[in-house]
Length: 86
Image 1 (cartoon, helix red, strand yellow):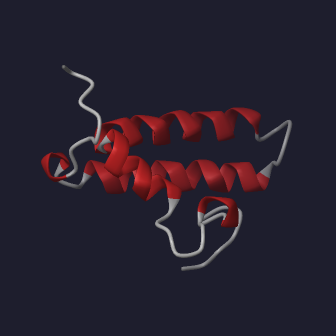
Image 2 (cartoon, rainbow, N blue to C red):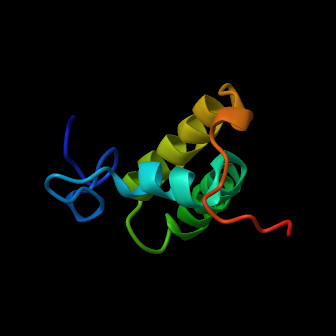
């Protein structure tokens, strides 16, 4: 895995642990993480001109690609740790 500020930031990859976004899928489920990805993609596009420019645009693209990847998975195999519907 390549550790960099766009694809796999060090602060979201603790040594010996799973990456934060993977843990989020286990806890909240794929659908919640898909929504998180869409919101983050929007946030990074929105702020790019005023904050980190090209890096933020790359982060936005990463989240859009992650959203597409998760959209192609079978969501029933990734149930949420929490049952928010009860």
